Image (tube, rainbow, N blue to C red):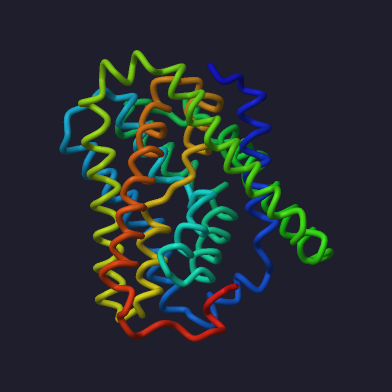
Length: 295
């Protein structure tokens, strides 16, 4: 079992590494590309949780797994979302901005969705029973604060931060893999026993949310690279944060199982999107302007 301290430190390092790649200018896309940003935030912060709610209400499953899926759906974009968006030929700057905004505001949005899940799915009535303050503080200290600190360092010392960021991102990716692998090992028996309860709904949420994200981008007349960024940002969640909330803040190993499964599923579907984008859409015209393509 991953200890609470190691999980806390690993997640903080992951978020710090993500922050080293972000700049205040990344938030400017809210004003320079408002439609793309608005649709991206709609897909990730509204449609994904909505799809998750529909799935857990329709598909019979143990309560802990249902809450775990809602926890994962409430989390911001993952550490690899920007890299995979780049590999797919998507608008990397848009992906970075979406990750930044959802991660910063995650201290408020994540506890809100999770506590709704505890009340309406877990049946925990009464504000006293819900760890709202503890969850908000925990997410802020472990996830949002390291992100803001790293962004501040990047703004103050950009050249030094750029050199450290490459190593930090590799370390963060390795730590994320260890978190998922450690959680997977600790919950192996539970996952094998309840694979049929978790895998289908996790896949349905992932594919359904990405399909809706693509539809929203299409209806909103976003450029192809923007649509790819929105789709991948919507599908790739911060599984490490989901595991931390379930195992450490809520003290429920069973609730972290969906985050483990989703972390495996989302990388498979993301790879499919990358292959599809490269093979079938590689020659499609309509890219974004150089200013919108972060290098």
